[in-house]
Length: 78
Image (cartoon, one colour):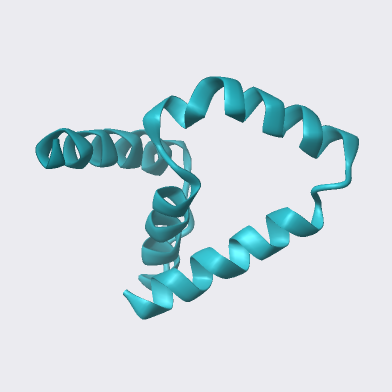
């Protein structure tokens, strides 16, 4: 869990370094409007870190399955 958190924090840091670009600002507004379809950035980073730790790089299938997995987890917690 600590490795995933550290990687997630690193990803957030990299994203923040791009924050002054026009494209990033547009994307940020889009994401704020979409609210990432119910996912928060920390959850996405945690999932990404977990996958990278296991030697896998995310693809479209990973994104779809992760979205479903987090949505189910969030429903269980409610």
